[in-house]
Length: 419
Image 1 (cartoon, rainbow, N blue to C red):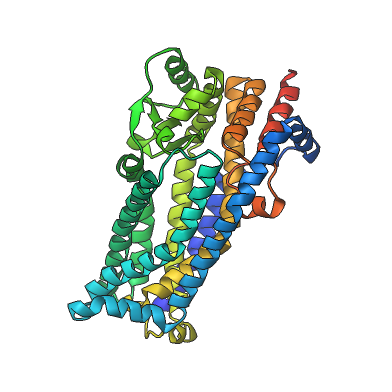
Image 2 (cartoon, helix red, strand yellow):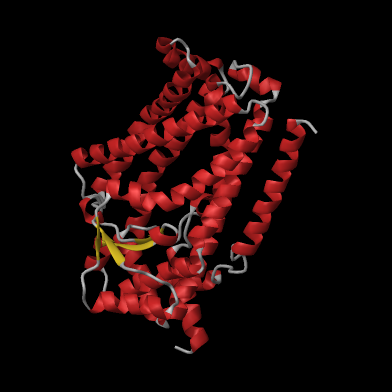
């Protein structure tokens, strides 16, 4: 069988594995609370809070969608015309058109151009956050964070094409197989190292101070059967007033993190409710689930790029002879961008199902639906959430159940336990 035949077979196998993993690991059986309960929850929220949240998201929406549109156009123009190939060649010209210079410098040039063209929309978003009082950063702090994110992106953006085109040169007929394995391993590696190498670039993490709250959280984790060495506090207040908590990492790098803003804004009982939600993620191995599906998806994407990228009409549009050339890097970016847009609503649906399961875990672990609902009210008020966003936007990109869905779920649980 030819390499292309093996690639088709591998693509089918990876697709089946991804579907099976999704069917077994994602809690599809958790439908949202009845709409009547959601509307009742919405009516219970202060009218001015709802109006302010909707106004805030209405102000953010033009910048977000404009950035998405410009990013897509830039990717398509560079990837599906000879312009991208010429940019990569230009970056490598001072180094004798060496493949290494084209791969690294050309790849960085493509990514930098896209970042610069969408930079005004990032500034627009920061202006809205400042106007509504959610951001605590000045423009200098914002610029420093932006440069940090560019630096992290540059490191990844240099290493990925370097590794990819090195594999291409070492295995010109079977690079797609080695590349798929490498992409999957990279996803797993990043799940381990991001919490300890990248997150500290943007925030300082300190153990939660000893006291009744920390004792209760560690005790609750022990009751839940989730080994947590410590609960970390992130200094989020230096850039935002928003409250949040999350779990990240795998094995020895797993951590539960709460924002310092959450400790300031919420009652101890509400913090306990939020951490119970995060323990649900840990207990159900949601990071592992995301890592596994991400690794399978990354491997599938590499094989798909090989098959689509060898299609002559696509290569002709990009002005290259083969997708394995460094000059074809903009074409790969264009294909990945389109695939990402297609996958966005699916990823959002999966995330909402997982978050709903973590909510159910928090309610069962604490047995306190009243505090859970109060916490959702507080989250919506402080974070300026739209408690009941437009349906099209919700289906497209919402990673969590809406505020009214979560409040309605708490009320349904209260009825279930007779409270």
